[in-house]
Amino acid sequence: MSLLETSIAIFLLVTAFVVVLSLFIRSSEYQVNVGRKVLAVTFGEVMLDDLKAWAGDYANYSGSWDEWSLKTMAEYPGYSAKFTIGKPEVAVPSTQLEEIRPPAKRFLMRETFRDVDLTVDFEGAPQLSLTTRITEPARKVSELKLVLESGSSSLGRNDDAKFRARLLDYSNQEIQDVVFRWSVLSMGGNATAVGNYPESWNGTLTHRFVGADGILRFIPGRCQARAVATYRGVEYSGLSQVVELLP
Image 1 (cartoon, rainbow, N blue to C red):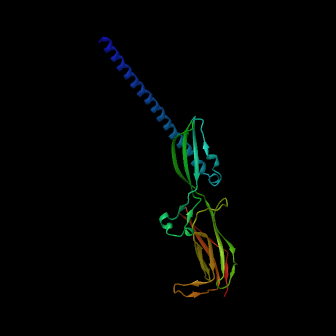
Image 2: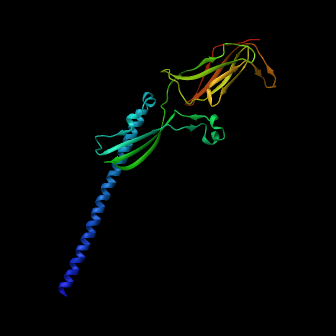
Image 3: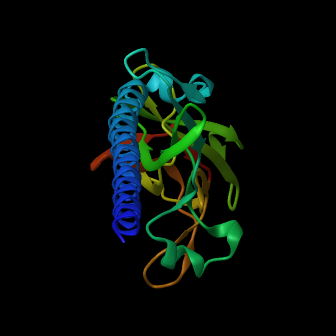
């Protein structure tokens, strides 16, 4: 009986030791994994902060993003950041309002945003994924410029002059994804100016005028096409060259 009792006691002690050892190993592995996850989160946040700082320069934002396909840091050995950069089409003023229009008539912002998907790996094993959206850096506006693209500066009745509106920054680069509103500045004559939605940067000035009474008139004299755009909450306007409206 003493031998049997001793054997059972040894078996129980060994079993308890194996259970405790297994729990200790699992606990150690869990702590290691948690530590890796914490470092992965920190590493990912550092990478995103570096990317946002880099994209804050418009020369970088508008250029190639290829250097951000894979990044590592000496301070985080074994970790790597894999970036996927996308150019989303964002409906303006909202997706619900634009969906009721035919696809060809929807205004979509294509240059203002970049979608960033980041995967952090440790020694090739994925640790976490992060997603963010980066906005084009604000640019200082130099002028809103109107250029005559077709037609002439002297229009007969029902003739058209087509203008191209461009909102330019101080580097003479065009600011994209801007909506223009068109009107006429009368200098004795009067005409009609309309934008081609959604390509509202294209405007047409026509030598004819329909007043509030609905009567079509041809009012000779001089006028200018005017385009107005809102960028970052500020309105900018520009005028075309003077157009002569013939009798």
